[in-house]
Image 1 (cartoon, rainbow over the protein chains, first blue to last red):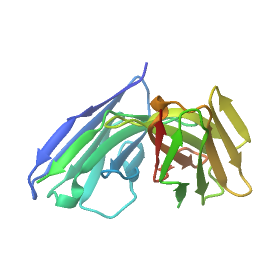
Image 2 (tube, rainbow over the protein chains, first blue to last red):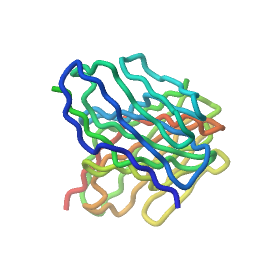
Image 3 (cartoon, rainbow over the protein chains, first blue to last red):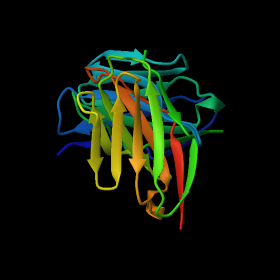
Length: 111
Length: 112
């Protein structure tokens, strides 16, 4: 069966520090991969999505970037975190004509 | 690109009442409309979905309706229970399912 792993679950980082969140999917090939951010009490904002290795689409301008070095690996990065980057980050995957499955999420607090 | 609007942002009902959440979408090419439930601190999970070739779908106490002409779809929960309390998100996706765009969420509170 398919599973999605996202880590870490929680993270506290100082302003200006780098960020790397990793997400891997097992049990499926060539999934669509997504990074969403959820601010406290807010909706799910699509940050990036990828339909294949090296193919990244950015939805909002920001100081975050995403990479897909392998078919089932999706990485969210930042060179210098801002206070406004705090939130709940969710990785998700889907295949054609099916639902999206979410990882457990990473709660990032920038201090 | 696709834009999904969701109303209301909060909804309070008494146990046993019905709850209705409405969403509109902008991209007429969208043809997949899932609904997710997110409990506090947890990941969103699919509760029901509908595709554009169907006008209504029901699963026990939950039903979803779709009006393609008006580009809106709704979630109906009947006989609500306290455990239905959560945040509900609608979403829309294009034909290729390459981009799933979510609404802003509805916080449903069911009081005993």
